[in-house]
Length: 340
Image (cartoon, rainbow, N blue to C red):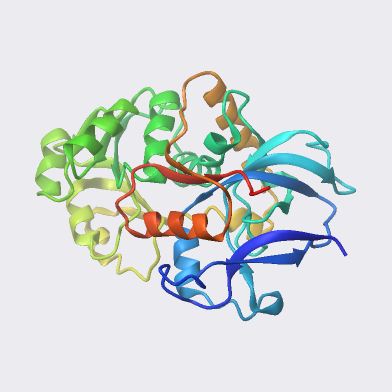
């Protein structure tokens, strides 16, 4: 039986507990027709990893062990019988899906239709920071909001210095020339960081956000993205224009009644919807990741890595989880290179 080293959890424990993430040898699962077997070179840690480790039971997974990890960059080792997009030796990056084993393993199976070519100008570590946040930001801007290069108006990015926000600001700068971006940042250093990525305006969400935003966009913003919507809808109703749109990526439930007076549209975004639901357009994630790789190689989109740890093992991943769990990180935390 083929096995691979994997890192995951058995019980929901504080990250300070050495048993919160553990290392195991697990069987390499049987490939599906569209699967790639990828030798993982680097991964990043997302809030989704932290949330699952802390809250989601591992009991329904083989031997009660759940492998975490979504973002990855690596090299294709072999391909399934129906694969047409890649071949062995190709360098790839992707975000995986929530209903299959995660990327924190040396050998990982992933459907080719949610995989993109790794940007040629980036190392594996720098590439691993981009997939999940790029897919999320892309789907918010172009699928949920339906923006095009001809769209004009004002976009407010709440939590702009986080992983998704820092990619969204760059995508807007690169592909939406008529859209002005207002980005929230809690310190002068964070404001400088996000202006460097293309935001025209910055506001401090720890202050009077409504007053600051309406001073820039007196009629209200056209589109608002948020990673932190809990208890915020009355505020958002004040700063979004009539018939405007909001997209959130955190979890509900939410009372959207404050939005009714202005007929404001509320969207949820979950980048796992396409692979989990096996939607007919699932390959759209492959296409957008290839487009992201093009933008990176053209110098129009930059990796959002701010911390790289090594090697890939349980102890280092616990350190990365602790950093992300602190909610004080800017950009992305990446873990690269397996122990030999």
